[in-house]
Image 1 (cartoon, rainbow over the protein chains, first blue to last red):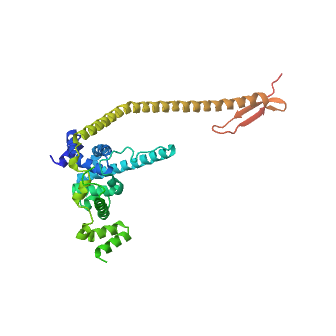
Image 2 (image 1 turned 90 degrees about the horizontal axis):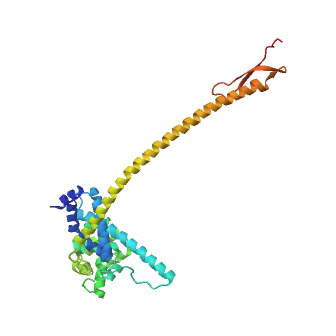
Image 3 (image 1 turned 120 degrees about the horizontal axis):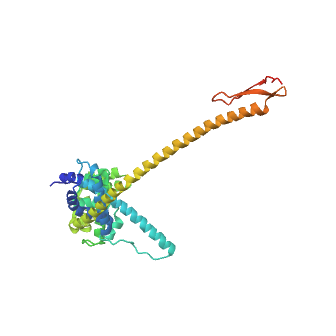
Length: 179
Length: 163
């Protein structure tokens, strides 16, 4: 059964077809979400929201476009929402700790599975571009479809990410092993 | 200055993405020296979370399915609940409309009646209490044209009654 048949089946309400879509794309989606968000819990939430949104919006999917890119575009936006929420939460915790004069943990509510230096030094767009390029073999044009920007801009994000990674590796901030 | 240094200089000088993208495409992506200053796919991949390191297919589906079923149940319950609500709403609207018609009819009829009563009352006062001609009670006719505030009083001497 190919992708388009599964999509057509899901549109007719066949849950079994949609289950196959989820199982096909859950691992790459989780990897991208973890690379963007830096921890598994948030990535799982983002992926759950992604597939629910995909099920609800499947009717608006354009079959002439790559389904994977469409899915990644939704996931990218969901991850940006999570990052915004996290920023607000961190700001609130900082504010409360300033007012109550309490010591706060460095990264509240964040159990990371990505090297922290990557999260600190690379912007979300750069991490997304890098993840799509390194894990999926995407070109600048394909990355631009996910990020909804021009290919030129995607090329710049990727260039900056690769430059920063090289610098991090040269400075020996992280080992070549994950975590 | 070497071409690589020149490109780097102009890259830093003009912080516009189309311009920077142009420099990356025209020079950096094709220059072995510049490419050596960038991380390769393997180097970048070694720092990132890989697809094969993630196993969440079935557990994720369980959560997604539960949410979708919950959503569809909620939707069904909502539509079931909305049917009587809609019916009730229409019932109330009909009842209010009927009440409105009754009230309007009541006030319309009341107004019509009171108009007639007031005209009659006026005519009664003129005819029997106040209109006198030559010190003698006179015959009076009070007339109010329909739909007008004007009242015409016509008074005439009563024929003398022979003793």
